[in-house]
Length: 112
Length: 114
Image (cartoon, rainbow over the protein chains, first blue to last red):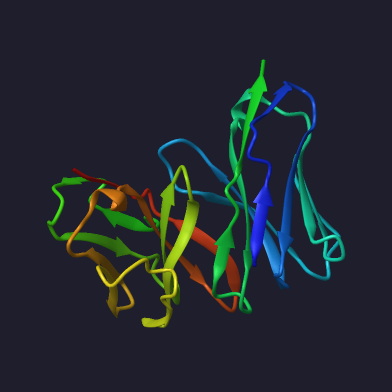
């Protein structure tokens, strides 16, 4: 069966450290993978998109890697801040871009 | 642009009643998605439209759920009759598929069925 797995346990880190979140998938062949941030009571907000032919993508303090052999994406937040505390969702397309499926998300807590 | 607009923000209803959720996508976007989010099941895709046409409704849980998109600027998700297990946050999202795949989400409708 198709699965998108993110660490269900919350990730607690100290301010200034790098947070690394994992997204694994099975029985999908996505053309791209996306990461979103969700704050309580709000809808998800797009952060980064990485395509299948890209190994790495960066945006300010964010970095995403995509390994289609391992079927895994890693999401890094460097120099983390308490304001980075949120739930982070990975998402991938199922049929060429129209059908976007989300993982359950990982809750990140950054302590000052 | 005001972003994706959903209404109502909160809905409390009794079991058996009809519920209609509304969504106005971002102008110019050609795809619209309805998702449901619960603690147990996360963010589930219910149905998506492309150019106002329903493409895949395999995520719609039962016949009690229906969705329409009569024009490019409006969509509804209807539950009739509603049941307590339908309680969840319902999100609408839109995108410009083919040029930019990222989704823009509304603020959601918190539905409580008593």
